[in-house]
Image 1 (cartoon, rainbow over the protein chains, first blue to last red):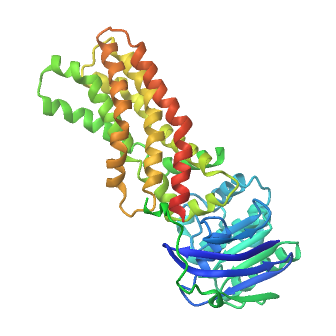
Image 2 (image 1 turned 180 degrees about the horizontal axis):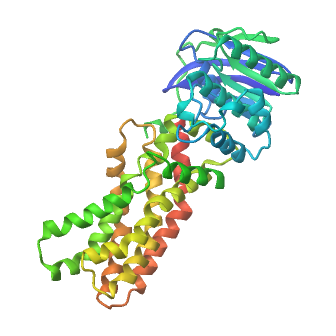
Image 3 (image 1 turned 90 degrees about the horizontal axis):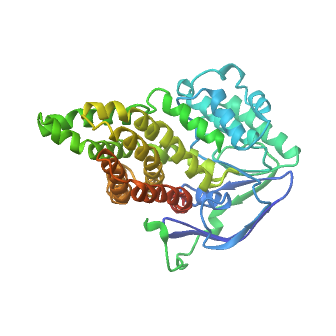
Amino acid sequence: MLKVTDLAVARGGIAVLEGVTFEVAKGQAVILRGDNGSGKTTLLRTIAGLQEPLAGQVDCAPDSIAYAAHLDGIKANLTVEENLKFWADVFQSDQMSKAVEAFDLGGLLQRPANTLSAGQKRRLGLSRLLVTGRDIWVLDEPTVSLDAFTVKAFAEIVKAHLAGGGCALIATHVDLGLVGDTLDVMQFHAKGDSTLSSFDEGFL
Amino acid sequence: MIALLMRDLKLAFRAGGGFGLGLAFFLIVVVLVPFGVGPQTALLSRIAAGILWVGALLACLLSLDRLFALDWEDGSLDLLATSPLPLEAVAVSKALAHWLTTGLPLVVASPVFGLLLGLPEAGYIFVVLSLLIGTPALSFIGAFGAALTVGIKRGGLLLSLLVLPLYVPTLIFGAEVARRGSEGLAVQTPLLLLAGITFGSMALLPFASALVLRVNLR
């Protein structure tokens, strides 16, 4: 469903990874590993389409990637329900009740998001994935600030997503107990001789 | 797009959302100017239209830096960029929300503030009209500036420096409409040019905003 071919990515004008090639099949999860600063986040942002690759290409169906990163995009002054409803409207989806149920947010719906704990916020942030109704989940450290119980519950949700014909690309240090390949990004570490294209609008 | 607009409006009205900030600032400017000029009603009423326009412009500027910065900080902008909503639509609804929460209240309040400055009677309709037509341009130009400075910490000052020069044409023609109207002269030419600036920036700037947002998201 997701095919990455000879991808090279840069962070802050410096190439960090090159020659990244892998494929995520339907119903499969690929776990990304690598030290801090090895380029996992940059790779995921590139695959999600937030930045341009230096070289190579990412093949997947258009508008099929749901991206979740370190920040959850939660508005503190809105309630949990309003936050979720907003994303449901943006994605024109009717999956909201399913997301609420899966992430056990029913009791929190009327709470303003600024009264949530870090773990609860994370749950709200991740529940957006189900709301999007998209097939390819690209997740950057999804289990940060989740307790052991919720991590397990989240692993079950990912499994259900895979069983339902989706796939996932997850950067994590936690063992989620998923069936799938592990990809160590360190092997793609850029040698430092790749140069940027002549013009970098990043100066703006 | 409607969802985003409604969310931004809701946020603006919630605690700390900044609705009324521009209006209060506008009021303070308008109250301060007579103190600075002194008790000369004739002089004041002659410059009233210009003061209202400069005040509206500064009030618009006040809330611009949070336009994209808040969504950038909490990660919403990344998520919006990966959503089905094109960034052009994001830019349009952000600018529209800014106008509805800042520009429109200024338009509505301007007759009252005109009274405080002793605006000539004939001028009211033209001040309101010029602000109504001109302030959307301020929001759309401002949204472009906000998109340019979105990744920069404390980018507010840079934003003002970038945006204020771009506001000059709007100010010139807006104030000209109000001045000519107050003096009973024909207003058609500056009014058309003002409308031209507004529609031009509404049509073109969202694309520019989306482009610089994409660059800043990298």
